Each structure stands twice: as C-alpha cells, then as structure tokens.
Length: 520
Image (cartoon, one colour):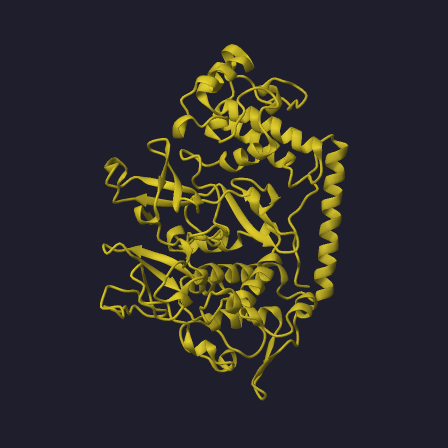
C-alpha cells in the first residue's frame, strides 16, 4: 500500500491503494483516513472537512463494483455517465450508492452531509442501512429507540461506548480497531430491523425483513429499506413487526393516556397482532401491547375489557422502600457478598461476574459489591452506608451510594435518571483499554455476551457494573490514591515519550483520546 495523496484527483492515490486492491484493502484504507479526518474529530477545520469528503467520495466509487469498473475504464466522466443513467434502489435515488441528494461522481461532488451519511453507512454489509450502530436514542414521533451497549454476541460495525453529556456527543469505536471518534447525535444514523406482514396490495412483501430508515409523521408511515428487494417501501405501523429487544416508547394509547411517554422493551409479537413488552408502568387495557410482569412469568389472560390485553412490567415494589438498600436481601443465596468490610478477591472473582450477567443474584447484591469497591462502608450500628474510603473524585459527586442498576425497574425519566447518570459516570471512568475486560475474562468460562435481541436495561447495566468491577480488580484494587496518581503520571510520561518517538520517525500521531473521568 502506498501513502495516501489527498492532493491527487485519482481515487486510488487518495486512499493510498494500488489499482488491484481488493475490497478489504479499500475498506481498511478508507476507515483509517475517514477516522483521521472526521469533522467531529477536527472541529472547525476546513482542511479536515474537505479531506473527509475526498476520501468518502473515493471509497463510495471504488467500493461499488459497477462504478469502479466505469472509473477504471473511463475515469470520472465514466462514473458521471453511470450515475446519470443508473437504475438506483428505491426508484431513481441518485448519488453515491443510492444516497438521497447525491451529486454523482467527480471530485467535490459529495457534500459534507453526504460524506458523513456515507461514513455511517459504509460498514453495514449487504443492507446499506443495517447493523451500523448499537442503538442510541431516536427522537422521532412514534417509536423511540433506546441504547444497547457492547455486551452482545452479534457482530457489530460501530459501537457507541458512551454519551458525554457535557459535550453532547457520543464516543464511537470502530470494529476491529482501536480508533474512536466523538460524534454528534445528528451524525449517527440509527435504524431498527422489522418484519413486514399483512400487506394486501403487495403480498410479495409479506415475510420480508427490512430496516426502518425514518418515521414520516405527515404520512403516519415508516420509510423502510428491504435489502433483498433493494428498494424502499412506505408502510403503516400495523404492517411491521418489531424485533424482540427493541426499546420503544408508548404513544397514542387513548384508553390509558397515563401510559403515553413510558418506555418498554419488546418481548415478542403475538398472533393477536399485539406486542409483548416489558415496560415501567402500571396495568392498562390497551389492545395494542401485552407486557410482562417484573420478576415473574405471570400474565393476565384478560384485559379490563375482556380482550387479550397486556400485563405491564410492574415496578419492583421492595426497592421502593427507602430502607431497602440497607435491609434488603444480601448474601442469602449462592452469590458471595457481605455488606460489611472492604471487597474481597472472592467477591470479585470471574465466577461472581458470571453470576451477575446471568442474573443469578439480585440487583441489590450487584449494587452492594460496586459500592464496596468504590469505598463506601456499611455502618451496622446506624444502619447506613458512609463514604468512609470513597475515591475523592467520585465522593465529590456521589457522597451517598447511588443505584447503578435501577432497582425499582421504573425506566421513566423522572424516576430512572439518577440511576442512568450514575451508571454512565461509572462507565466513563473506565479507560478505553479496559472497555472489553468483561468479555475477555468471562469468555474462557463460557460467557460470550448477551444476545442482542434479548438485551434489557437491567442486563445492560449489570454488564456495565461487572465490567467496572473487573477493571477495579485489575487496575485499582490494593493501591492507595497516591499510588494510583503516580501510576497515572508514569503512564502519561510513557505515552508522551512514545508519541515523541513516532514524530521523530515521521509517523503520524493521533493525539485525540476519548474522555475518561477517573474515580480517583
């Protein structure tokens, strides 16, 4: 591979690839250059924006076999001619690979917005809109989709590591790479997979899988891309079946309007054309959703109007008691944990982490172990938790032990926000090199991760807590705060020396690092 030449007009030279480079080499070259020059990584840099457009346009052409063939034979003019007469997916959608608003081939043809759209789509496999991201919030009318984090079995291409509330950006990590970028919410394209059913006018669509691209509030329909047919369709909500595990927001329920705005997780779709979901609400009689009860397999056989109705995920009542954190059951089962004293090696073992992610212990026991690792100590006489040995930075923000799991299992904003924020703060304290510690530690004993379709807020937060405990065990346990600060100083010196050496050797140095707010 030759060095990229961004001053060239030749697409191969721009990417630094030979003309016989295969798709894998082109993709690797594009990924590296796109991350380097991404506008969100180079704020207010016109040079970066221009270079990002160039590399995106080059890869958009060379990654398409037909366009590449035209480019190899006829150059830019051949691509332009191909674009002008191409039969694009969705009935004439022009531009790069079917992007709306595309301007065809040739340097400078791809706008900054199109370049960022293409970057988001570029790693989506056969379905150009599928599998691009782990889910982030989608503030559209109708359904809104929640956040699923990295502990999943399925292959993904971009992983949202965390959301930085101060900068209002996501930290996104590229697959098979240590490269990360900071992206604005509007730069992340979020989609969800569905199955099409009960269409009378076009029965050939029934049973096909598609990807929701957007919600059209004026039409009350979804715009869905069907990869197998390579076309877009506009469908009503009643003609799509959402994947199990999709986090959705309840809207438009007239019989129980107090449910509107509540969040739930789709469990399955029933023959009664309703969804079974886990939700943080009270019982209702909506004919649209059937919802599972928390902590049990119980369902109601009837709704209030004798139709097949939902059973809502009830709040975990014991956790509503303010004294639950100091009186709730801890250490009564097979999970090794005690409220008293500092954490022990036995309490933090991989076998214990496996019990956490497999939900073989209760939420309070998970919280208790994290509290002990952070330095909270239980005062038996006064029956309360105290920040006796809590790390300074953490203590400043959380003088009292927060609920990292959301033990009440009420995921409305007003109730769950403190748990969500404390969980995010815990995750944010983990350096990039330790983000995947949980998978590394548990894979040898049989845990490969959660199935994406079975993710719930409870599972996600358990995995985050377990991952942090592993990080604490490997990097913080047994050190004083002074020793940790000295280790950090030495580490930064070593990193600076390594970067200086790279500069001396004429190598490029990426100085951007994802933000980490350490507990000490």
